[in-house]
Length: 185
Image: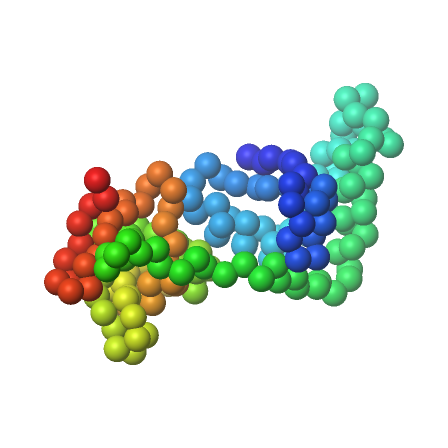
């Protein structure tokens, strides 16, 4: 699936009104799909197949050769030989939300996206204070289907390394005094 739109705000080098295309697979693993699509050989192959399909559509009379889509595809294909430029928009994870002494966390038994590991899904088994991170941390493991996942290996992540999956992650409050978690009511 895909969607196309324009940026509504300026963010780093991307100006307001700049166009973009989002490619997704209807699951929260979409970020992994996007990462794989952006691998050089994969992206180049996809674009070449798109060009072949567009040529067939032209020959059938289903698309104009000078269409905006054809022009955009031509420009993208022409850029494929250039060295990629990596752009950072300066986006960082939000600090842990607190209310009084409680800290908002992803609850054990739920999952989030691991920002430090290609946005792969991560199952939270517990939340605890880690002297190593000098703050809260999650203990858990990667989900099945993640790259090189071993369910027997437990991983420790700083709290800001894991983000919630909207509509899927169960969120709650962690009490640093007692070490207990409670669902948000």
